[in-house]
Image (cartoon, rainbow over all chains, first blue to last red; front, side, top):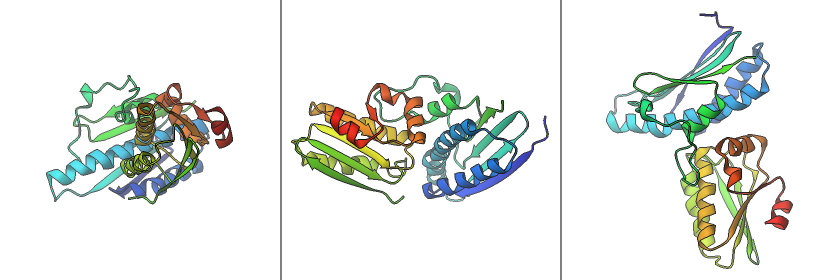
Amino acid sequence: MQKPELEKEFIIGCQAAEITPLLKKVLQEIDSSSLKAEEIKFNLELAAREMLANAIEHGCALAAENSSRVEMKIRIELKITEKELSFKVSDPGPGFAWQKYNLETMPRFEEKGRGLKMIYQVADQIKFNSCGNQITVIFKVN
Amino acid sequence: MLEESLELLVEKNTAVLKFDGEVIFDNSNQLKEEAKERLKGKTEVDKLIIDLSKVPYLDSSGVGVLLSLFKFMRTREGSLAIAEPNAKIRRVFDVTKMTEIIPVYMSLEEAVNQN
């Protein structure tokens, strides 16, 4: 495992209004690193917005339905090494059966079901934890 | 709920629907319903242009709003076009292949003239 050049953790509440300020901080952190790749930042923002939307819309909503004692927070980790940038989002929800999800076929006229497929399209790699309440995207550097 | 608004300008059979603010999962349903409600009263409109010049970002649920309005216009045998998306939104359109369904123009004037 390579030693990260940058490793940062952020925590936000389950509010859509927190997404844009968070992404501003994340992009500032990337700018302060040695990583100079506008295309990665462009794709990261697109993926991150969908990941955070899913965390709020599904993770937080299901967590609130299931238990009032769960801490309603979303944890975000940004890591940059010489070879890659990784961005991880963990939500307080029970997760979902990502193993059964088709990431490849983009819906045509349907109004829903594009978020994860968009993430899959722009990232070099996408990973889930076993229960599906944590998603990581990886962008290769160079 | 995020702050957002929409404005509908109608001239003869053409309407320009202008969103102001992000169109994302938190407000997309409300914006979609409000847009349809306003269009229902304008039965003469068969050309709709969605002006995105004041929209900093539109996510996958925003794409859903555009497709919903595309289908709404199709039921009245009308057309829909999109004008002035920024670079981030154009990337969303590329990834979702939206441009294969709805024409996108770089300026409102171009959309009005060609739609």
